[in-house]
Length: 201
Image (cartoon, rainbow, N blue to C red; front, side):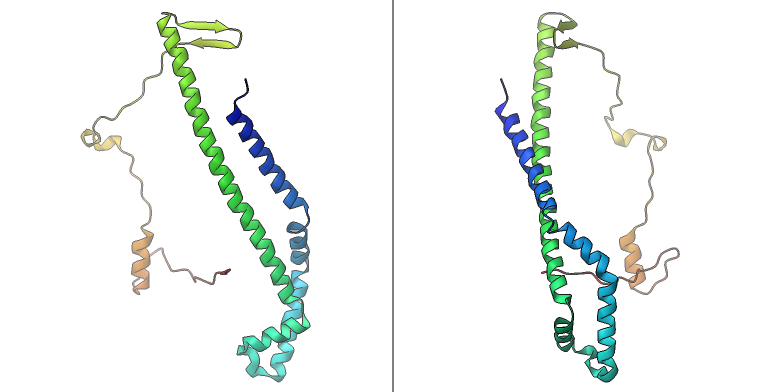
């Protein structure tokens, strides 16, 4: 008899795989992105030349973002390209979130199957012990009781001599950062330039 939980899970996985494959093959995200990537140097060159021409006759406009936006919107495809990229970004990050949800469901299913496996093993073991036998051989396999290798058990870590501990060493970046930001010198370390990050709203 087919486990309904397994059947529904297989159906779910198939639908997820089909959804992602179909979306990727529609040509909207990846093909458009490839076109933009290939033409990016030409787009950058066009923008740079246009702004250079504007600044040459009106250098005060260099800090006027509204005017620059008007010029670029009227003379280039900049905003249209950025809008397409935003759509692409939204779809791509949506896929990422979908994969996270799918992975969480798979992990949960894996835990349930592991628990089921443990229950089955426990039942077979009890049947072996009840029959006072070490092994069952049936058409679908052999189940036997075998001795497990000995494992080390730590009953009181505080009583262990130092030689039985592994000592690891790693930089305390929090403390190093505090010292550097306070203007103190820390040999072997320095603050990065920081840079800028892109924020999408």
